Image (cartoon, rainbow, N blue to C red; front, side):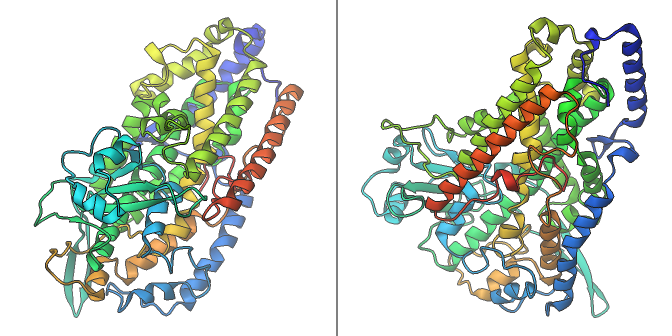
Amino acid sequence: MLQPSLPQDDTLDRQQQRNQAIAQQREDYQYSQTAGILLIKELPQSEMFSLKYLLERDAGLVSLIANTLASSIENVFDPFDKLEDYQEMFPLLPKPSVWETFRNDAVFARQRIAGANPMVIERVIDKLPDNFPVTDAIFQKIMLTKKTLAEAIAEGRIFLTNYQGLDGLKPGGYQYERDGQQVKVTKTIAAPLVLYCWKPTGYGDYRGNLAPIAIQINQQPDPIANPIYTPRDGRHWLMAKIFAQMADGNYHEAISHLGRTHLVLEPFVLATANELAPNHPLSVLLKPHFQFTLAINELAREQLISPGGYADDLLAGTLEASIGVIKAAIKEYLENFTEFAIPKELTRRGVGETDVDGSGENFLPDYPYRDDALLLWNAIKVYVSDYLNLYYTSSAKIIGDPELQNWAKKLISPEGGNVTGLVPNGQLTTLEQLVEIVTQLIFVSGPQHGAVNYPQYDYMAFVPNIPLATYGNPPSRDVEINEETILNILPPQKLAAKQLELMRTLSVFRANRLGYPDREFVDVRARGVLQKFQARLQEIEQEISVRNETRLEPYLFLLPSNVPNSLNI
């Protein structure tokens, strides 16, 4: 490999070689679309999974195959006979952490801050949404307090998850043959609002815990057709939590996972190949963090967002509707790219590091995802800054780098990703701008994807905890609910088995480790920068391990040793 260099610092002969290399890369990395989503036209050989990757992945899947063969669950579209039958889907596989505790309200609430999708919870700043009429009487009865809801909001202790993006989604369905007849079943769409309160005493990190207060299953309030359920509502409350979890699962898969990690990275991988020479310092830095990303996204196109694929079969909406949600999530992210940097994103939801009360205590004191993610964000930012400072010694170097400027222009252009929120006024002019962009790319490819991918088995393989679709309408409040009612709402046996299969496949192994690329940097100065980053990651490993000793449950998904170096599964 050549020594990294900026194009303006090279000789004319070397610049010509760079331009030839870029021209060849443009031939190999052509832009295309699938269902309106930007994806590479044809995967180059160099981007395909390595033999080592395939062997390790397949070795991990052996346990899934063995488990399927050992399972006594019939592969049919019938509902299970009892909730415990879902537990029998794991004769050989590890039992997911929630398989016996999913009914527990504290377990339900904790998934908003340390589960598979810790990306939705927000602090209520002024008042509840007008379409969520939780009364003081409800709040006081559930929280056993004389405080009003307005007082609790003013104290910063009220939180909300709102799945309004799923409102009006066209429901999907499935069909199968029984006794020679075709049976068609339509899934159920829900777009819940869920209210929580931080209880500052009790347990959970020794500071308190998040408690659920109320659930409204759909957006339009109605005391009869769409009532508000609370923990005092028995099985109706369990039913309401199932619909809330289903909505969270759809938000997770379509938005937090596929849309805002996998697919928002695609234009950056393509622009890097199309506009930067192989020895451009930025290309050298990013390449290890883009390893296998195009390959796994190609697999997503073939197996996830294709007719008859996992999204079509498992998610609540039709395939077209689910793709619409994914596209909207990508568009919002790319149009507001810098606003989705994790420190800003947390602050926007009112749960950031600086969202503190008068005594300096965070309004949401126990938020493992936030606290560990910010450690990694800050470490990555220092690493990126140290590295780029080796080559960009002035703003003039940024402005005078034609490859870098073409990279930014390509990303912003409609055909190159439409990342209109990349830089203010469409101009990349400072090192600080570039550091922020690259920090975000590396964070998304490693920690962010790790945080939403690897918890999937623990929280989503056991289907009653987070079903990816529901199969019956919520019964009226005055209708008695029994276990059969719940089972008819949950996925039938065949689709539950397919959800387990997907969750195991997506979390079965890690192909690499954050901060440890397969190849050393050619530039000895960059090696020193990487070693400094590795040392900081080891310190963070210890910091998180200490935190986990006092957490209600250890949060392991952002331990640096558990975070991949690239988005690759």
